[in-house]
Length: 342
Image (cartoon, rainbow, N blue to C red; front, side, top):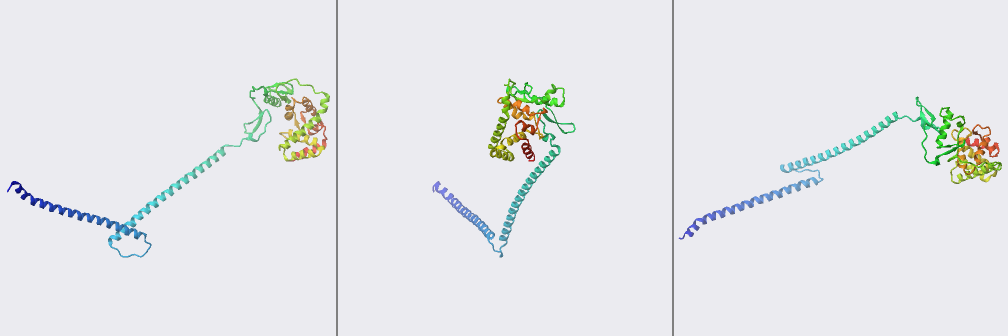
């Protein structure tokens, strides 16, 4: 026998044994695989059963094997834990919201307390309702009371159009300087230039210039022209709806009643000029709104208004105003009293 044959006889039994062992191992692996697959499917079936038990609405119970009861108990415990977690989250969220609301309320309360503290500290300004005339400002005394004093310094005006001409034919740097001088002289202060400046007032805007003389004929016709001008101003304001209801009623009456045309217009303007305080008299200073704008156009306006102050006390009463405009005295007094009551 050859060497190869001898080797074959020796190896063949070994190969056979190895083949048998390999087959046994394959069978063993197959059995293990089957067991694993069966276990997986069994676990899925148990889960499906538990899900069906959870979904059912039946309240009846049946006997079950110990393993199934344990699974149900475990599942229920898990659900309880889940619900507990959700409940805890909701409670935490509610607590957070409550805390935010409390902080907002506390902030509002603090703001309110701050306002109260501010109100306790801040007192109303006594000067808020104190009226001071031109050339005067409101200041507090040592006792904290409001008092009108002469303005200390007037602003420097560089625009020549801000200059004014006084009744003494003097050019002033601004209207503030004129009012300041009036105040100084009225208070008897050393800054007053003299007694005549106690009643200094503005004639017109701009530097002083030579005005033509008002002739006797022009002065005689001026009251009529003045009455007519006042009526047209009143009617223009009525058309623009800038009159109070009572003044508007007077204007409408003047439109339909010629005898009321001049008197109503004169009463309206005189009461309009009688500013603060309403003392039933128009001062030379209060005549400024009609004197200054008209001086450049009506050179007779200054001597006319001066002639209205018959007693030369720098105050024009309604009687003097009516006489100056050649209007009946009784009608003027009655109308003006009616206005004063409103």
